[in-house]
Length: 74
Ligand SMILES: [Zn+2]
Image (tube, rainbow, N blue to C red; front, top):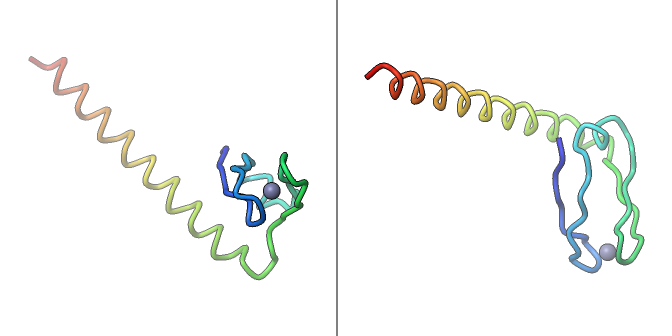
């Protein structure tokens, strides 16, 4: 899952893969080369947020499927 985050130093948006970040990969800002990675203490919180997001996407897909079923049923 690709995500973007504003650099805490220069505000450039840094694109990173959330799953890679969760697995411990560090990323760097393309503008100022600031490196960031996930602090071990914030990992449970972020994992929870990612799970919530995945669930939201799943619900959205279900809603879309239901809508297209209705459209074809006429
Ligand atoms: Zn930066």
